[in-house]
Image 1 (cartoon, rainbow, N blue to C red):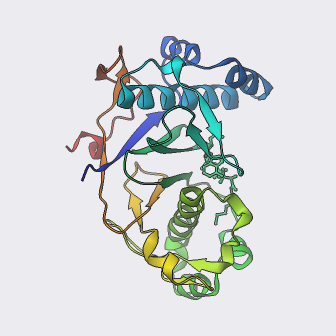
Image 2: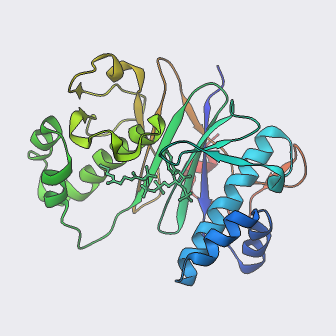
Length: 251
Ligand SMILES: CC(C)(COP(=O)(O)OP(=O)(O)OC[C@H]1O[C@@H](n2cnc3c(N)ncnc32)[C@H](O)[C@@H]1OP(=O)(O)O)[C@@H](O)C(=O)NCCC(=O)NCCS
């Protein structure tokens, strides 16, 4: 079974690379980019979409601007002409994470750890009872990271299922703590079969970021992909805007 590929992307590459990534966008994506007023938000969207197109083109052996996206009811993008290639994207701060699989539906989430957020208030407001109970035992200095672990895992699950917030956040619980390999949901309100169907694992990230992957089970494993960029159909070369960190360098 092929591993799920995890691509990490720098959303602030040098200027020439930004221009190159923007070239891959279709007119609708350019129009969407132009609606973002702050220039850094425009840049991040453009680089994320351009990089997503490169990653998918590399998997399919085609050209990034030839890809056509279609959107599910809640906005989840799929490839209009190759729906069997599953993928999902998340961006936060200056980084993006893309998961790709030929075999199974998946969702990813990435969050940048920020100061000044009322993590305890968000816990009380959004999380399920088992999650609130487990988090109440986490000491203060560890709380923000543990909160983000829960948040990204919940979000990855919602994104794998493509439901967005149509699925109530308090109706299921994810495991806390380190999660180097896939684990089931720990609780669901009324659909116990869902727990084993959508295992979740942590995605190792550089300092300041927390990531999660959820994919349809039962058995899968995920691997980071070395940074590459599209250099022609089926050709990939070392990626100038891939995040350079030890995790990515480990084969
Ligand atoms: C898309 C959604 C599911 C996640 O949004 P987000 O966390 O703000 O953003 P991310 O960067 O992780 O993901 C955005 C990407 O997911 C993809 N996406 C959009 N809708 C999606 C859906 N329904 N399912 C899966 N993926 C989706 C797109 O590629 C999108 O990228 P784009 O904005 O460049 O087009 C959002 O609609 C949502 O419902 N967010 C819930 C927010 C929340 O309160 N979470 C609480 C978690 S405890």
